[in-house]
Length: 213
Ligand SMILES: Cc1cc2nc3c(=O)[nH]c(=O)nc-3n(C[C@H](O)[C@H](O)[C@H](O)COP(=O)(O)O)c2cc1C
Image (tube, rainbow, N blue to C red; front, side):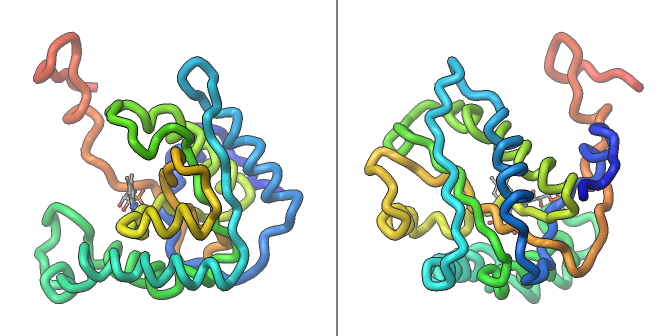
């Protein structure tokens, strides 16, 4: 069963979901989500991608340990400071920190992981390279949303990219562009993602020219 949601309602209610249950995702649902993801855009429709689905506990454990190393270096060691920050401070809010910490500690419990992988990306210098896959990645998150399945785009494992490439048996030119843990949320809500006001970040004709809505 999918949630009966308008497309725009879904766009406004797909935050990161970082408290996931271990309940399995049925195969037909996973296929439907992946089939929606690969409808996304890529330069010249080259589709130089592969979508590696991981459910093997041994693979997950190794990558989750690398992820936790990245988590600790980027956020975990600043826990006290982040949790004590006054409201409105830039960066992860205390509740987002707790959620992200929970995901780091329980990453391997998410029943399905997906690595979107891009070919010819390992040595690439094109700063717009990601545009050939991240649209499809967002489609994956939105399609998952339709089935009540939560996702988070994560990258904190990437300090061990070479080891991940080897572990997943990727071609030498390929780069993992993210790791998306997927699962049915067991806490939290499909709340509207908090963002800066649209009028503040939209510019008309020239940078700095704002308008009221
Ligand atoms: C490039 C990129 C890397 C990210 N890496 C991680 C990550 O490793 N772990 C994590 O929990 N969230 C990660 N996120 C999710 C962001 O923290 C999240 O999109 C942001 O806080 C907004 O959250 P919201 O959509 O729930 O409001 C990443 C997002 C992006 C776009």
